[in-house]
Length: 537
Image 1 (cartoon, rainbow, N blue to C red):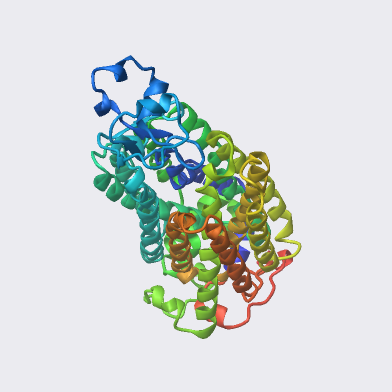
Image 2: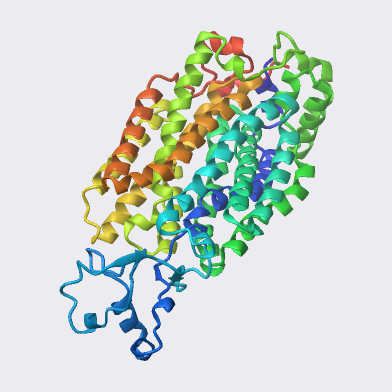
C-alpha cells in the first residue's frame, strides 16, 4: 500500500484539499503584488531640470512656463526637452530661432528635477531623485529584491524539508510582513533596498512552500487541476495590481497595501495542515495520522482512517533511515538525481528570465502602463486553460518545450514592429506573456513531480534559486539597450531557446505517482494509472 492509496481512500481532492487551496490564495496574492511592484513604485515619470536657479529677476520672470523651458532646456535628437541637462544661462534668442543650438554651453541639472505627477503622485525616482546618472540605482532595486528571493528559495527550501512545511510557511509570513511594512517606511534608498531584500527572502518561502503543500495533499488524477487552480491566483492578482496601483499612486501606501493580505493569512495559518507525506517520510506517523483523519472527516471518509492504525503509515512510504537529514548535497550525490537537478535549474533560469523580461518592461510596449499591466494579467488565464488540457494529453515535457519556443518567437517578432505601432507591440508582448506564463505554470507542476518527497522542497528551492538568479539579471539585461536597442530582446530569445533544449532532456512525468525517496528516482518509476489508486483493504 502506497501513500497514493491512502490519499485515494480519504478522497484526494475533496473539501479538505479545496480548503487548503482557498487558504493559500490569501498569502499568494502578495506574490505578484510584490514581484511586479517595481513596475509602479520604481517608475520614472517625465522630468526636467529644476530651472529656478536661472531666474535672473528680469525677463525670465515674465515668461510663461513653456517659454521658460525653451530658453533653459536643450532639445534632444528626437525634439523632446532633455531630462538631464540645462543651459548655463537663459538663451532668450531661442524664443525666435531654435535652428542653431549645437554650440550652446550646457551643464547637468544643478538643483534637482521637476517631475510630472500626472500618473504617479510619488515613486522611488521622485522621492530620491533616482534619474539620469542615478537611474541604474533605480533599476538595481529590482535586482536587489530578486536576489533576496533567490536567497530565500535556498533558505526556505532547506527549512521546509528540515522542519516541515507548516512551520517554515509561518516564518515566511512573518518575515515578509515585517520587512514589507518596513520597506514602506524607509527613509533612504539604502534602507529601502535592504528591506526589499529581506521581503524577497520571505516571499520566496511563500511561493515554493504553499505550492508544494497543496500538491502533496492531492491525488494523481487531480494534480494538474490543483496546480492550475493554484496558479490562477497569480494571474487574477496580477490584474488586480494594476487596479490597486491606479487608485494608490503613492509608492509608500502601495507597498503597504501589497503586504497587508498577509495579516489575514497569519490568522488562517492556524487551520492549515502540515504535509502528511513529509510527516511520514520523517517518521512522524502520529501527526500524519491526525491530519489524514481530519482530511477523512472533512471529506466524509471517516471509516477508512478509523480502521488504519498510525503504525501502519510507517509502511506506506519506505524510508531507508528515518533519522537521516537531507540537504542540497543530496540533489547531486546520485547520477539520475544530479541530471534532473541540473536540467531543471537551467529550465527555471530560462523560464523566469524571459517571463520577467516581458513583465518588467511594460513601458516598452507603447501603451498606458496600467492598461498594459491589466492585459498582461488577463492574458495569462487562457494560457492556464490551455495548459490544463494539454499537459494531460501531450505530457509535461512537450508542453514545456513548446511554450518556451513560442515565447522566444513572440519576442523575436516584437523586435521588428516599429515603436509607433504601439497596439501591435502590446499584442505581440501579450502573446509572449501568455506563452511565458504557460511555461511557468508547467514548470511548477513538472518540478514537483520530478523530485522525491524527502528532498522535494530542496529541489524546488534550488530551481527557484536559479529562477530568481535569472530574474535578478533581467533588469540589468534591459540596460543593454543603451549599447544596442534590440540587444535585451536577443538575450531573452537565447534564454528561452536554451531552456527549451534543456527541457527536452528531462523525463516525462505524466500519470506517474510522486516519488517518495531518492532511490525511487534512481530506479525507473512505473506509470501509475488512476485505477491503481484503489487500496486493497
